[in-house]
Amino acid sequence: MSTDTPWIKASRSGNSGNCVEMRIHAGSVEVRDTKQDGGGPVLGFTKDEFAAWLDGAKKGEFDHLAD
Image 1 (cartoon, one colour):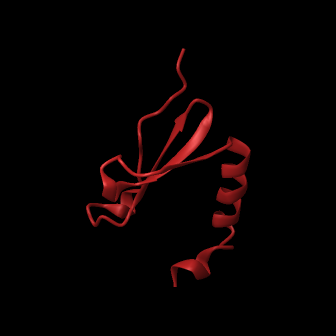
Image 2 (cartoon, one colour):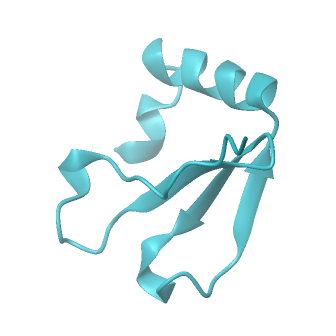
């Protein structure tokens, strides 16, 4: 049984073209930029790596990068 998921993006992204998509593929969390219609690079992270990043994002540790 496959645990792969379809690509998803945050609802805040809308149709602005300023978004990334994520999915689970082959046990990793993959991230890509949507502007290249799926033809650009894909970054892969272990679930533990992604969980560590997500924890930091929830705590606001990266907020200064969006200023």
